[in-house]
Image (cartoon, rainbow, N blue to C red; front, side, top):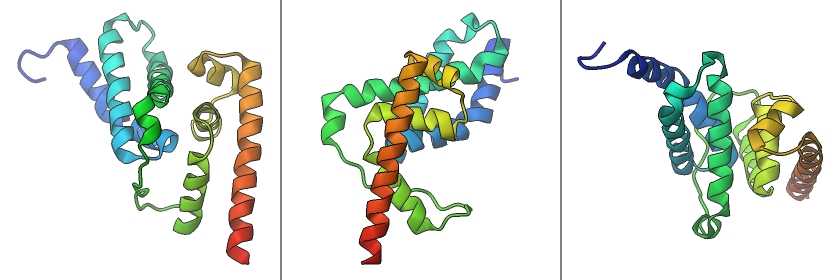
Length: 169
């Protein structure tokens, strides 16, 4: 333990070190920009750091952090300056079963969804949360999660079909 570090600080440092990369990847899936993902990750961890001593159930840290991340993202997209800014960051190279072109097409289609639908799809299918957990993260009803997921998936399918149709012509 570094000199002067409290037990709470050590626990937070260990948690941060263990979860930082996963949270950053989730942030990237939400926003589609690595720099913005870094900002969102930092915001979520800052909120957690402030509340660290208040969190009684250490098993709930991931859920609390996920909620902080999604809410930071949704708050950011409401800001006018974010709407004007368009990123061109590329996804990182990595091993995946889909080819890079398909991944880029999927990310581009995901970016075209409204922020709330994108957040619902990320929570439901990337984070593998159920409807109730997603509703808790987003602070909305389960019905809203279901309708936003249905609309988001339909729009995503439509966008990807258009892309496939355009590339086969």
